[in-house]
Image 1 (cartoon, rainbow, N blue to C red):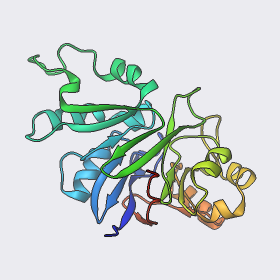
Image 2 (tube, rainbow, N blue to C red; image 1 turned 60 degrees about the vertical axis):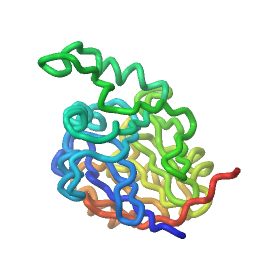
Image 3 (cartoon, rainbow, N blue to C red; image 1 turned 135 degrees about the horizontal axis):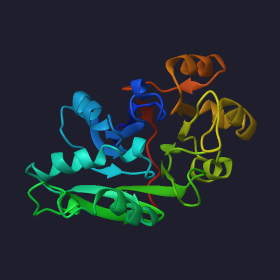
Image 4 (cartoon, one colour; image 1 turned 30 degrees about the vertical axis):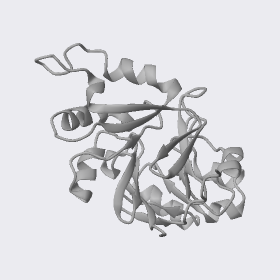
Length: 250
């Protein structure tokens, strides 16, 4: 039986645009939240407001900047004190040590002690791909915060999510070559770590730009200018229907 997939944005702003929400999204299956991508300072509150659930069912982290992991400590407390299974936390393997150093080294993560940070999670280090149910997600390095310091996510046939990045046309042509929706970091003005409108126009062919959805921008005024330039722009809370994924090869 076919299932309806969608990607819903919890927030779309860059680190300076807190009013737009922390850049994060949710892969939905038949309207149910299956996978949260990134967990910034506002993400869990926005998630609970939309889905009525205190914690996500699974989480993938693209990189370790606080506007993308600033809600993970809060997620620990919500998850630790609730009944239920540990939350699968998919993390690119090269980032695990850094995540541990940032969040998990205290012997008193609870003020009364007797708990490890990882007790609330099922940590799944990832390298190249991971399974969530019968869906095979792929990960890939992007151009942000150093070599192999940040990663994107793809589901063949359905979507590519760039995470924070400079232009990555060679990656997009490899992981989104079958009509997938391309969710791409795109502000009005680029920077040494992020993509701008002029970068998109220079680096990507028109066929890719027609499938591209911009997020991680500076302001609502910038979003309007991106739209005037012909870009599709995501807003917080907005969902995008996805094509059915390509079945993984046996």
